[in-house]
Image 1 (cartoon, one colour):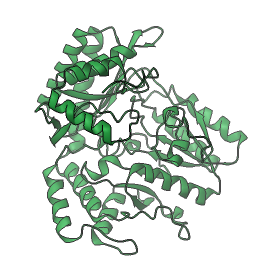
Image 2 (tube, rainbow, N blue to C red):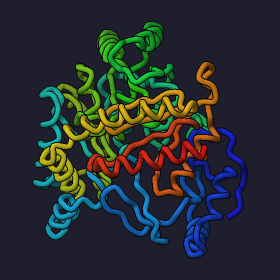
Image 3 (cartoon, helix red, strand yellow):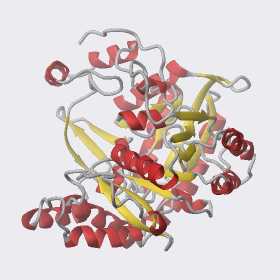
Image 4 (cartoon, rainbow, N blue to C red):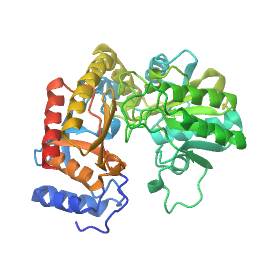
Length: 448
């Protein structure tokens, strides 16, 4: 498995053709390497995906297990594993549904989808009471953008620079991440990017970032063709946490200029931040919320948009029209996932875990000068590595090395922006498991 080229952008730490990736393959056993070769021969190669790191044969709880027998604590999970892998409560409900109605053709209702729609919308403020399902988060973003055009009659979008809202053509157009846009040519919708709020400390109440909202207003003052502003409530990949003052100002601006406020909570909803939805931390109401990933409990792909009854105005067009629109299996999984969170009081547990991790990471920051910043909320944390705290020069190669050191010792996580270790464990993780993960991180920092 020879490298085709050296990726020098380092947008993510899991680059396919770095020197550290080459060294990783040297410690993989021969049978696993054989399977990786087969994988690389049959799948189209793409950045951040194929060639792969290892071969997984099973998963349970917070762990994924490789064919070699090696187990990884999964602090990445593509953000689908809020209630853990192979959650028995969810599995049982999906199996029951599979025995009765595994698929529902469009044009027909099914009670499982109705029950889930009522359960899901019941979690929101009474104004947000309409839902539309889709087979994935990218599709949910696409439906939200379509609906915004119908409602406002405007076609332009504002988003944060370097944001990600999915990998389809319309979603990458709405986002700001260049890694997905190169070679793609002209894109629609026409999107204007503004700086995202960025704080270099774990405080999201102080309002120092309100001036970033003013960037939005400066754009809207001079362009009346903008119909929507789309953003993650809390930036998932590098864990940027705006203040309440920022979001309340954004809400005020969007209302004043008749621009829909679309929140992408696809990776961070369902307890990740200590509340069911991240925007609940901020005391404002969005126009549309996009959901996905963990909605299907890591078992069945399903996504959704939630919006207001007054925006139920697209009866003459097909916003989604997806084959698996009202998937009985996806709806059964989503209903069980939410019930499991509620029955096991996971929101309270996550808040307690946040306090524990805040104290632990503060100690880590004092021990290791390479740590430039630690940001976190609930069970979503980012450890930013820098060569120099004054200049904030990114410690890119060190971050990638940290990832491989931790992988060797059974801890998997994402590296974002080249230098941010993003830690996103299942919400069911025990305190003992958290302590084990911290020890792996400590040992890696010591080796670094």
